Image (cartoon, rainbow, N blue to C red; front, side, top):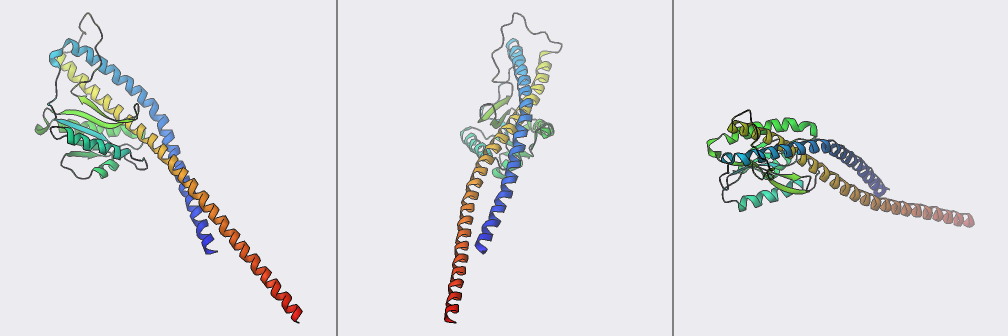
Length: 284
């Protein structure tokens, strides 16, 4: 009986775990639907700014800035929560690859406590910040991130550094290294017969445009990473729930087998008692 009770207790525990995982999967699904609207809007905004920058720089090539080769400050966007499979491990593999292939050391800014815990203390890590759990937290994360990036890029030891982001891109389903500053990897400029009309000096216009671009691009990066994280969490929960169902099925089979054995033993005891009673009656 004790063995069967142990199995029943285990089955109850698995049922509770399955309920929690199903709730987590449902929340991840809801979050992806919310994020889909944000990402679509943000991508359109970034594309518009990139096109404007390409058209502007085509007429003002003297303002094009090239980063110092190998000098890069990179924002690595990981997860704030767990239960998302190898989400952070994939980022760390790319981090190691970048650190080995770059001629000069890459400096890192980490976003997400989970990935921060995996990276550990390294001399190349300038700063670690908490990430977003849900879409509503992205604006606050972006505000902290842009403020800290501005401070770091103003440091004399980081003068001339470019800015990049390493993150899970939801559009491609892969880890992407995206170069942000100075403005580069822009689309081909449109064919125009006249230079763009400006109300500001070209250098001031580019400075303002760069600020808007950085804000919009980092916003897209954060939303895209959070979308990819929630998609991966859904997949992870599906696999975990499938394994739980398989474990529960095996335990139920064991439970039923154990119950059948107990019933058989009870029947044998009853029959044996009946035989003994008959013998006693005949003997009397």
